[in-house]
Image 1 (cartoon, rainbow, N blue to C red):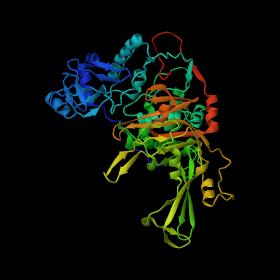
Image 2: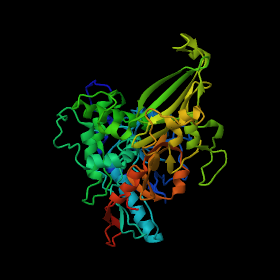
Image 3: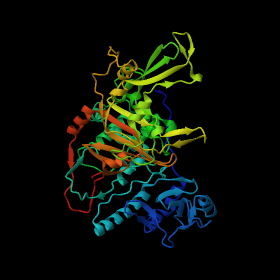
Image 4: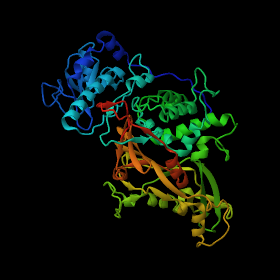
Length: 552
């Protein structure tokens, strides 16, 4: 774990947005509102009343990104936005027509302004209200747009106010919804953070730890005026999400984002990040803070920080000399297991529940992970018995299982042919109930020796090997412009967490998703968590809207 304490600076706001609002205020936003159009599925875009197909005023093109100038209403493609602002002084701010997102032409970058989001969402709610009165159909709002930068003078914490979005009343007349099910506002390309936070918030051991006041942010001595404490900020999110006060409006994890930036200065930006990298970074930050009080290091096998108590497991690596059969064994700690997709059984079609075709499966990926691998001739290892480098084989197995098992699917790989990174879009079948017995070191070694019964050091046969899935993080889109969301399994019902928006989904939707990270918990803990979860009543008033986000 890194002990470096880098200085921290907040990313600079956009000066062009500041100048625009100082001169024009919100008049441009209000004028734009009449051009906004919301589709039935909740996506908001800009509709030019003068023409059916929007075209660039410079090249007459209509493909790709088009931007609507807030000053003169002219339209420019991505290749001519900079030319427009250079030829028309002060015409710096525009709106992405397809996404209704604020864009600075001078910076060639997206910018964020809560006032602009308020304008979009108020129009959105008007369209929802009209649609509901006309069709009496269920509807849910579009997730907050992803932004890259803050506008001038705007704090992320202000989203707690602007994020109090009203959602449509649940026409299915449910009397309650699970405690802890709450949307998280997008703070500018932070879907990677929100997806991981949802998984952490619903990991039973993590929830029990923070809700039992094991880390109290009010008494923590690790906080300072210039340095935030990552566990403290996570404790604050747990308190807000599991509060019995009934506030279900989307929550803005701004302080947590600031704290994470302090821990990972090299990632302090509004750019999209990898969810798996973020997950490891957060666990690293929690461990670093909590272990200091105990004078422990990452390598200590008995670390009692919440990170290692929940996610820490141990891998066994056996390297066998192919000449004399001598085996060298090493053990390594792990917080998750990264699996290669079984490329021999990959399919680009969604997975059906009982599909026995050649679709890649999680069990196949685990088999591949624990399969003996012959090392190449350029990887000869020194054999202690032969006393010289020999050809050898390597086999991995799991010596110790964690309470919460995180399985990461390697969907991003480097193409040797194209010399670039690419994403593997293949679907994979994964079970909701998982027995890890075949992948334990005890099983692997016994199988290697013909299933002979003998005493095995570190035998986990007495420990629970049965797991239940409770969270799935998926990635859709391309490597450069993708989107993360989380599916949560609560009391056998699946919920889709897409930033601020929560919706109930069928398990078929989950099975058909492109899973990126899967979280399994010990079966006993999963069913105990079901018994411990209480419900909050939903208001029975008959108004059209409720201050409830995530009620399904």
